[in-house]
Length: 206
Image (cartoon, rainbow, N blue to C red; front, side, top):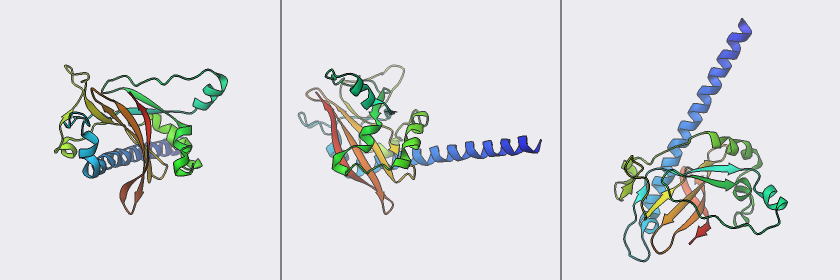
């Protein structure tokens, strides 16, 4: 009986710990996006052709970490065609774990080896998140509703993927416009309590 009670207490503590970690990461996700908008918002939403400001999608894209991208490439010698992302406010994205570790511009050491298990576990956490409107007061916004599934022009952030200690993060920013659409990756680090961009990498464009 004592063993069952102990197991129950340990399980409860573990669940509470996971929930607390998820809340922390939700809060940090919003802080990261707020910081980016405060520092680079006007640049990020500007349509370079029309000079109009594109609306920010309040629904964040969910990226799933794939641990077997390179295995698939090695097993198949054919040229891999880049698939452009489907336009939808709530689409699932994907990122190779090799990409998180393998960017030469950040010396292959941005995320550490002991981050890997925690990074993959994040596939099952924070499956949906929205930017609070208080963060985007200076910008036009759009979001998923019963009557609105997607529009032609908008920008969208992804839910960040964090290091085990929550001091490093990876997120994507997608830009959809009439003339050109593109997507970039951002690697950020928390330095002296503030999130800073360490490196930006282009993912795709049309």
